Length: 256
Image 1 (cartoon, rainbow, N blue to C red):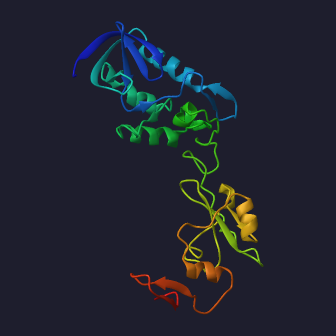
Image 2 (cartoon, rainbow, N blue to C red; image 1 turned 45 degrees about the vertical axis):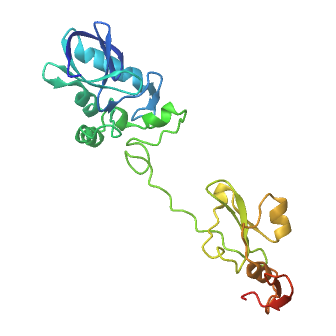
Image 3 (spheres, rainbow, N blue to C red; image 1 turned 180 degrees about the vertical axis):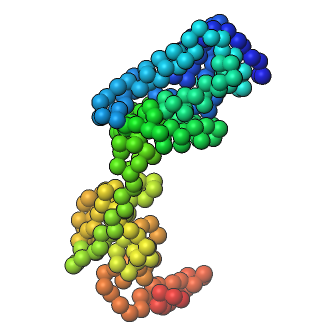
Protein backbone atom coordinates (compact mmCIF):
# COMPACT_ATOMS: atom_id res chain seq x y z
CA UNK A 1 0.00 0.00 0.00
CA UNK A 2 2.94 2.36 -0.51
CA UNK A 3 1.10 4.64 -2.95
CA UNK A 4 1.67 8.38 -2.79
CA UNK A 5 -1.09 10.84 -3.59
CA UNK A 6 -0.13 14.47 -4.24
CA UNK A 7 -2.30 17.53 -4.63
CA UNK A 8 -4.20 20.34 -2.94
CA UNK A 9 -5.43 19.13 0.42
CA UNK A 10 -8.61 19.94 2.32
CA UNK A 11 -8.54 19.71 6.10
CA UNK A 12 -11.36 17.54 7.46
CA UNK A 13 -10.20 17.81 11.07
CA UNK A 14 -6.92 18.19 12.91
CA UNK A 15 -5.57 14.79 11.85
CA UNK A 16 -7.48 14.02 8.62
CA UNK A 17 -6.83 15.37 5.13
CA UNK A 18 -8.57 14.86 1.81
CA UNK A 19 -6.84 14.97 -1.56
CA UNK A 20 -8.90 14.52 -4.74
CA UNK A 21 -11.69 12.76 -2.87
CA UNK A 22 -9.46 10.41 -0.90
CA UNK A 23 -9.15 10.81 2.85
CA UNK A 24 -5.98 10.21 4.82
CA UNK A 25 -5.66 9.74 8.59
CA UNK A 26 -2.32 11.16 9.72
CA UNK A 27 -0.19 8.41 11.24
CA UNK A 28 1.15 8.66 14.80
CA UNK A 29 -0.68 11.83 15.87
CA UNK A 30 -3.93 12.41 17.74
CA UNK A 31 -5.64 15.81 17.81
CA UNK A 32 -8.65 17.01 19.82
CA UNK A 33 -12.12 16.41 18.45
CA UNK A 34 -13.72 19.36 16.66
CA UNK A 35 -16.07 20.07 19.56
CA UNK A 36 -13.51 19.47 22.32
CA UNK A 37 -13.04 22.34 24.75
CA UNK A 38 -9.66 23.08 26.37
CA UNK A 39 -8.53 25.79 28.78
CA UNK A 40 -5.83 28.27 27.82
CA UNK A 41 -3.08 29.64 30.09
CA UNK A 42 -5.48 32.29 31.44
CA UNK A 43 -8.14 29.69 32.23
CA UNK A 44 -10.39 30.68 29.34
CA UNK A 45 -12.14 27.92 27.39
CA UNK A 46 -11.66 27.50 23.64
CA UNK A 47 -12.43 24.81 21.06
CA UNK A 48 -9.00 23.24 20.72
CA UNK A 49 -10.05 20.77 18.02
CA UNK A 50 -11.19 23.55 15.71
CA UNK A 51 -8.04 25.50 16.48
CA UNK A 52 -5.90 22.52 15.43
CA UNK A 53 -7.83 22.10 12.17
CA UNK A 54 -7.64 25.83 11.36
CA UNK A 55 -3.91 25.96 12.13
CA UNK A 56 -3.27 22.96 9.86
CA UNK A 57 -5.32 24.54 7.08
CA UNK A 58 -3.41 27.82 7.39
CA UNK A 59 -0.09 25.95 7.38
CA UNK A 60 -0.93 24.07 4.19
CA UNK A 61 -2.42 27.09 2.44
CA UNK A 62 -2.30 26.65 -1.33
CA UNK A 63 0.61 24.22 -1.25
CA UNK A 64 0.62 20.68 -2.57
CA UNK A 65 0.62 17.91 0.00
CA UNK A 66 2.02 14.42 -0.64
CA UNK A 67 0.43 11.59 1.39
CA UNK A 68 2.08 8.17 1.35
CA UNK A 69 -0.39 5.45 2.31
CA UNK A 70 0.84 3.08 5.02
CA UNK A 71 -2.11 0.89 5.95
CA UNK A 72 -5.84 0.72 6.56
CA UNK A 73 -7.05 1.20 10.12
CA UNK A 74 -9.88 -0.74 11.75
CA UNK A 75 -12.37 1.83 10.46
CA UNK A 76 -11.22 1.35 6.87
CA UNK A 77 -9.44 4.71 6.72
CA UNK A 78 -6.14 5.09 4.90
CA UNK A 79 -3.38 5.86 7.40
CA UNK A 80 -0.63 7.93 5.82
CA UNK A 81 2.52 9.98 6.21
CA UNK A 82 1.72 13.41 4.78
CA UNK A 83 4.26 16.10 3.92
CA UNK A 84 4.15 19.69 2.77
CA UNK A 85 7.38 19.79 0.82
CA UNK A 86 9.94 18.42 3.29
CA UNK A 87 7.79 19.24 6.35
CA UNK A 88 6.24 16.27 8.15
CA UNK A 89 2.78 17.65 9.01
CA UNK A 90 2.26 15.16 11.83
CA UNK A 91 5.41 16.14 13.65
CA UNK A 92 4.58 19.80 13.13
CA UNK A 93 1.14 19.38 14.73
CA UNK A 94 2.60 17.68 17.81
CA UNK A 95 5.50 20.14 18.20
CA UNK A 96 3.10 23.09 17.99
CA UNK A 97 1.02 21.60 20.81
CA UNK A 98 -1.96 21.13 18.50
CA UNK A 99 -2.01 17.37 19.02
CA UNK A 100 -0.38 14.54 20.93
CA UNK A 101 1.93 11.68 20.03
CA UNK A 102 -0.41 8.73 19.48
CA UNK A 103 1.66 6.33 21.58
CA UNK A 104 -0.82 3.50 21.14
CA UNK A 105 0.29 3.21 17.52
CA UNK A 106 3.63 5.02 17.29
CA UNK A 107 6.32 6.65 19.43
CA UNK A 108 7.76 8.60 16.51
CA UNK A 109 6.63 11.99 17.83
CA UNK A 110 7.28 11.68 21.56
CA UNK A 111 10.27 14.05 21.30
CA UNK A 112 8.10 16.70 19.60
CA UNK A 113 5.47 16.33 22.32
CA UNK A 114 8.09 16.78 25.03
CA UNK A 115 9.30 19.95 23.29
CA UNK A 116 5.74 21.33 23.19
CA UNK A 117 5.31 20.63 26.91
CA UNK A 118 8.54 22.39 27.83
CA UNK A 119 7.61 25.41 25.75
CA UNK A 120 3.98 25.36 27.00
CA UNK A 121 2.66 25.49 23.45
CA UNK A 122 -0.92 24.87 22.37
CA UNK A 123 -2.97 22.57 24.57
CA UNK A 124 -0.07 22.20 27.01
CA UNK A 125 -0.25 25.88 28.01
CA UNK A 126 -3.47 25.39 29.98
CA UNK A 127 -5.43 22.27 30.83
CA UNK A 128 -7.42 19.74 28.85
CA UNK A 129 -9.14 16.38 29.01
CA UNK A 130 -7.00 13.61 27.49
CA UNK A 131 -8.23 13.19 23.93
CA UNK A 132 -9.08 9.50 24.32
CA UNK A 133 -11.05 10.23 27.51
CA UNK A 134 -13.01 13.04 25.81
CA UNK A 135 -14.21 10.56 23.18
CA UNK A 136 -15.48 8.32 25.98
CA UNK A 137 -17.57 11.19 27.34
CA UNK A 138 -15.29 12.34 30.16
CA UNK A 139 -14.88 16.07 30.72
CA UNK A 140 -12.23 16.28 33.45
CA UNK A 141 -9.33 18.56 32.36
CA UNK A 142 -6.48 16.78 34.12
CA UNK A 143 -3.59 17.32 31.68
CA UNK A 144 -1.58 20.42 30.82
CA UNK A 145 0.79 22.87 32.53
CA UNK A 146 -2.05 24.48 34.50
CA UNK A 147 -2.91 21.19 36.23
CA UNK A 148 -1.39 20.54 39.68
CA UNK A 149 1.29 17.91 39.25
CA UNK A 150 2.53 18.99 35.83
CA UNK A 151 1.61 18.56 32.17
CA UNK A 152 0.93 14.85 32.36
CA UNK A 153 -1.72 15.20 35.01
CA UNK A 154 -2.01 15.38 38.78
CA UNK A 155 0.29 13.40 41.02
CA UNK A 156 -1.71 10.33 42.11
CA UNK A 157 -2.89 10.62 45.69
CA UNK A 158 -1.66 7.87 48.00
CA UNK A 159 -4.15 5.12 48.57
CA UNK A 160 -5.93 5.24 51.88
CA UNK A 161 -4.89 2.45 54.23
CA UNK A 162 -7.39 -0.35 54.59
CA UNK A 163 -10.02 0.17 57.23
CA UNK A 164 -9.00 -1.53 60.43
CA UNK A 165 -11.47 -3.78 62.14
CA UNK A 166 -12.32 -2.31 65.50
CA UNK A 167 -14.28 -3.53 68.50
CA UNK A 168 -16.62 -6.41 67.78
CA UNK A 169 -17.12 -5.34 64.17
CA UNK A 170 -14.46 -7.43 62.49
CA UNK A 171 -16.18 -9.21 59.58
CA UNK A 172 -14.67 -8.15 56.27
CA UNK A 173 -17.15 -7.67 53.43
CA UNK A 174 -15.09 -8.05 50.24
CA UNK A 175 -16.20 -7.65 46.61
CA UNK A 176 -14.43 -10.01 44.19
CA UNK A 177 -13.33 -9.16 40.66
CA UNK A 178 -16.44 -10.92 39.40
CA UNK A 179 -18.59 -8.73 41.63
CA UNK A 180 -19.37 -11.46 44.18
CA UNK A 181 -19.99 -10.06 47.68
CA UNK A 182 -18.20 -12.37 50.12
CA UNK A 183 -17.63 -11.90 53.84
CA UNK A 184 -14.67 -13.28 55.81
CA UNK A 185 -14.66 -13.95 59.55
CA UNK A 186 -11.60 -13.64 61.81
CA UNK A 187 -9.58 -16.84 61.83
CA UNK A 188 -10.74 -18.05 58.43
CA UNK A 189 -8.36 -18.85 55.63
CA UNK A 190 -8.52 -15.59 53.62
CA UNK A 191 -9.20 -13.17 56.47
CA UNK A 192 -5.72 -11.73 57.00
CA UNK A 193 -4.97 -11.18 53.32
CA UNK A 194 -8.34 -9.58 52.57
CA UNK A 195 -8.07 -5.78 52.38
CA UNK A 196 -11.17 -3.60 52.52
CA UNK A 197 -11.64 -0.64 50.18
CA UNK A 198 -14.69 1.31 51.31
CA UNK A 199 -14.50 3.57 48.25
CA UNK A 200 -15.40 0.58 46.06
CA UNK A 201 -18.34 -0.43 48.27
CA UNK A 202 -16.62 -2.93 50.55
CA UNK A 203 -17.59 -2.89 54.24
CA UNK A 204 -16.90 -4.08 57.75
CA UNK A 205 -19.78 -5.94 59.43
CA UNK A 206 -20.53 -6.60 63.08
CA UNK A 207 -22.36 -9.90 62.55
CA UNK A 208 -22.99 -12.53 59.90
CA UNK A 209 -26.70 -11.75 60.02
CA UNK A 210 -26.08 -8.13 59.06
CA UNK A 211 -23.66 -9.18 56.29
CA UNK A 212 -26.18 -11.61 54.81
CA UNK A 213 -28.98 -9.06 55.04
CA UNK A 214 -26.79 -6.63 53.09
CA UNK A 215 -26.28 -9.16 50.28
CA UNK A 216 -22.95 -10.73 51.26
CA UNK A 217 -22.39 -14.48 51.52
CA UNK A 218 -19.84 -16.77 53.14
CA UNK A 219 -17.03 -18.15 50.94
CA UNK A 220 -17.92 -21.34 49.13
CA UNK A 221 -16.17 -24.47 50.36
CA UNK A 222 -15.64 -23.35 53.98
CA UNK A 223 -14.31 -26.28 55.93
CA UNK A 224 -16.08 -27.68 58.94
CA UNK A 225 -13.07 -26.61 61.01
CA UNK A 226 -13.41 -23.00 59.82
CA UNK A 227 -17.13 -22.94 60.42
CA UNK A 228 -16.61 -24.21 63.95
CA UNK A 229 -13.82 -21.72 64.64
CA UNK A 230 -16.08 -18.94 63.37
CA UNK A 231 -18.54 -19.70 66.12
CA UNK A 232 -15.94 -19.78 68.88
CA UNK A 233 -16.08 -23.55 69.45
CA UNK A 234 -13.05 -25.63 70.32
CA UNK A 235 -12.02 -29.26 70.63
CA UNK A 236 -12.29 -32.14 68.17
CA UNK A 237 -15.20 -32.27 65.78
CA UNK A 238 -17.11 -35.50 65.64
CA UNK A 239 -17.87 -36.72 62.15
CA UNK A 240 -19.68 -39.94 61.35
CA UNK A 241 -18.11 -42.18 58.73
CA UNK A 242 -19.49 -45.40 57.30
CA UNK A 243 -17.62 -48.38 55.96
CA UNK A 244 -18.03 -49.48 52.35
CA UNK A 245 -20.27 -52.33 53.39
CA UNK A 246 -22.43 -49.94 55.43
CA UNK A 247 -22.34 -52.32 58.38
CA UNK A 248 -20.81 -49.99 60.95
CA UNK A 249 -20.41 -46.32 61.85
CA UNK A 250 -17.40 -44.72 63.54
CA UNK A 251 -17.02 -41.38 65.31
CA UNK A 252 -13.68 -39.70 64.70
CA UNK A 253 -12.10 -36.30 64.93
CA UNK A 254 -12.12 -33.89 61.95
CA UNK A 255 -8.90 -35.39 60.57
CA UNK A 256 -9.69 -39.11 60.17
